[in-house]
Image 1 (tube, rainbow, N blue to C red):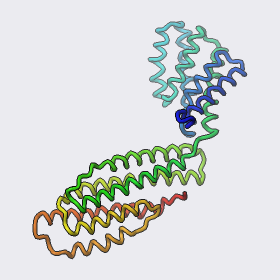
Image 2 (image 1 turned 180 degrees about the horizontal axis):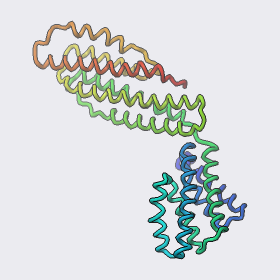
Image 3 (image 1 turned 135 degrees about the vertical axis):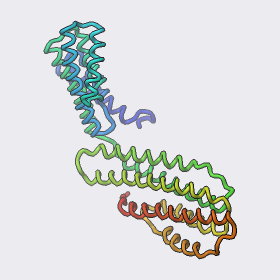
Image 4 (image 1 turned 180 degrees about the vertical axis):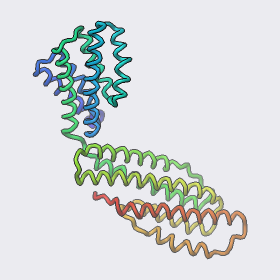
Length: 328
């Protein structure tokens, strides 16, 4: 951000527009300011998207110019002919998978309509304007894209902190069944994970050639998908925990598990501490005297299901944290 309110994409757009206008003017093209308009439409957020959208815009414009030229030559330069062009060409361009180029193609056709005649010189001028505008936007897009590494680390810290807060809330609820938790941390975690997936995908789309950095960004994407899978497992845990409606003495032991997990989740590597505690606790829990009331039976059955779901969560963490170690 520049001065707190101008984003990097806006800066790129300004550079691309001015560059396109200067080149079009140097080439002596008519309506050279139109090249700036075309470049503004073509600036994208990633390199891969820039290349795909530029080709779509260019070919959509060529198709539109061809159709519009035929219509104008046959029926003249009337508004109803312009409407017929839109009705005929927009569906055609979409069917050809050039949907991204619909607006760009309309700009060059409107230029042609404003000229009031169809000649090779005018058509060639529009093709060159198109090349200047799209070329400038592509050049700026390919020249530099901001790295997302620091942003991804920040999102990861936020996600890990949210997971830690969730486990602390679970622990508190186990210690006191009357405690009411609003679940805000679950919503925040889901939003942060989606933000991480979007940022990692954007970073990956900025890599045109295979490289070590591309492998790192793939790890980032897989990491946030891992967290998404774990969040699903936590939601299953929440449903089971809702069945633990009484505070029992052994609930404290289960609460200790989640307190430990709230610390483990912030560690970049799989520590295995929670898994070892679970391995020690589960056989002790099974050796407890049989329940004497229906309520105690239901609570203990729910806790055993919590153990199973917790193992699913830990299995994902054990497998993926080892594979997705990312150097800081």
